[in-house]
Image (cartoon, rainbow, N blue to C red; front, side, top):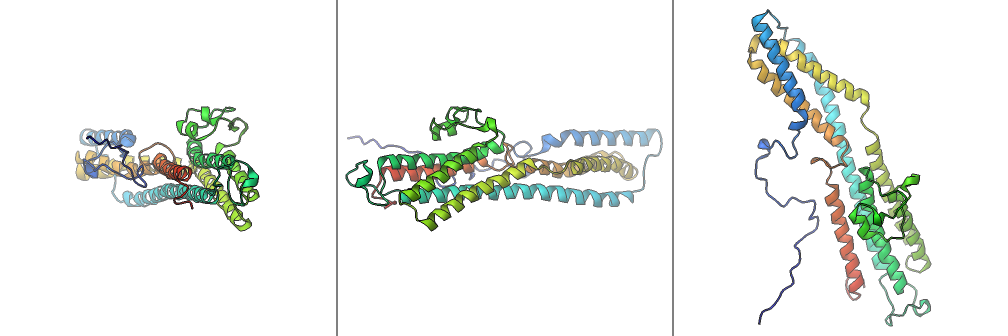
Length: 343
């Protein structure tokens, strides 16, 4: 007799944000994925070409060398500006990651509280409200709980898309938008108001807050508990607002302009101070220095807005998907196993 086993996809917590494949190449040999070589190739090439021109003129026309004593003064300025640039950008990246974690934590806490508090159901399965003791839920109320859990999870996807400027179709249901995860989570009777300036995350969190009020009326939440749930909703809203501030507040353009100009000036002065001592080797030396400095600046530029699709950005898709999986597994257990974890 042949036994057929049902195969399930293998997974684990944080499956989408943890690396599962070993690196095929050492990081020192990587030049494409996650690297910034492509972004800095043009300035490095231009500085190397300019150095070649200076070396050629120095060897054929006349003396073009300058005292090397001018380099240390410029090096201090360039170093300080690069430290500020990279430090500020990484702080934005790390703060954004922590705020996204706060959003996921709030969603997990609200999901847990909603499912546990609404898990009691009458033994006869009747939908008549007067047959239920305080704290027990009718089928309609359980459907309401399932709906709000999906709305709560969808708020994470909405936050992700809003931070990337990927808005739902104005005046239409998010379920009909081009984002399949929203279509899978939200009912068709929810319509977006982004054409009127209301972000979908805030709209969904209003529905969550209204559910807390209904839970109090049903006897599921007492006053202090409802207050704590509202605190979680407020924390989720505040974390999203701070991520919006990161996205909409770039590093001042005056600093960016001066940074680029100082790097270009430093790279153009280097050949004159190196040509007498190193000759044609100056081309390679200037290219290496330009690669180092422009690379640090390029990393800071990528980390400045950490919510996009760049390889070095926050893995928002994986983080949100992991929270999505966790909450929907809890919802599935809540729906099918009344004698399990929620009793």
